[in-house]
Length: 148
Image: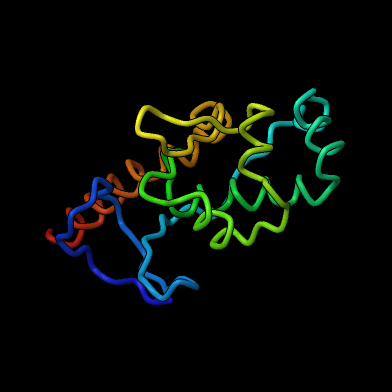
């Protein structure tokens, strides 16, 4: 993986990006976020218990894969521009009808454009959501130090 300078391209994200290759062969943009946070009461939640009873522990692993994929590529929590099938493939999800199951249990919902949004993303993953702004602030500070 190689870090490249920002390129002007039609995109709404303006934070530092890492360019990579996806299994589909086209470049993707990743944020520089290194982790996600799992709420301490995650396994005590009713919808988590329902996911386990519906999909077994594979469903939990696949949900966490989806969260990690989202944090890396869509830090604001909305998977805009990616189809359900692409999400399944790129996140490495193995559970059948996974998107439908997550939507039915309330782990995800659709925004007004039909794109998937992770439920409570801004609350549960506030560190991820704020990463682009922190990166931009750090970049400006580094430039200021360098330009002295």
